Image 1 (cartoon, rainbow, N blue to C red):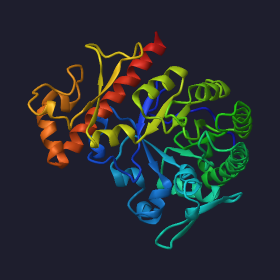
Image 2: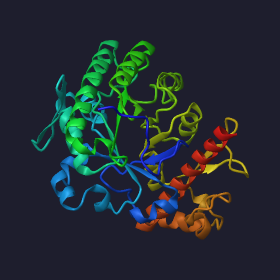
Image 3: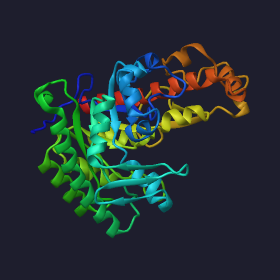
Length: 361
């Protein structure tokens, strides 16, 4: 099956930020509210949804998009990140083998995730963009682990594509069919990144993702490695920076030519009282000091009748003051989650719009 560098309807070559709806929801917001907050694409986690509520139940409810009421583009993560978050960081939670990921949970449950199961699960969920199962690492992991990760990722990508082609059947030539993207691993090793990217390009996918933890041990973005992967993947292919969500990092990836970035960070920060703002009077991503965080728990905001940002046109900034939001936050009012999340998502849309304008100039 020959795959092509194409995007589903609703996704353009301009950079977009994708919030993580891990369990099929953005906490505090209904799917009908997300487009007005600047969201066009969501990322759901197939591994977590497989465990609860379960793929059979989701399919009985018409698939994930219908269940969520989401009209936009839906991406589904394969579960490869859980190789890092659940197994590499806690050996008692399972093991990684040549066949896939074997998970063991505290309640006694055991789950095996193979490339074939990852594809079957994502197709049954009904996503628009599916990811191959990959073996995710941290940049500081030993070279031997990085080599194994690349070998597994390549082998699993082949198995994923075979399973995808077999299950797609007659839908292969359907322009609205799901897209399948491969994930480039290799830590910070240019040689391993080249090896992985070259092998995935030979297999052939609709698009690609930058895989592995995107920050170094000091929390700094792996700029050189991200730039290398963008150079390794031909420009006609969409490229997704998986796990990149800080506004400054999203702007940096957008400038490199990445199509998409996803993370739970902006929505999680919103719920915890960390709201995003441009530092100057005019929204800009120029210079090194264009971004700041407003900490809503600070008492200085208690009597402030100004919005979060004078430059923001989101519903929250048009309607509510910092003082009111401070009050809601302190009282743990559910309304706070909604209003703060709307603002941070709108801010991320502003950032990617500014990057798109730069790239078009």
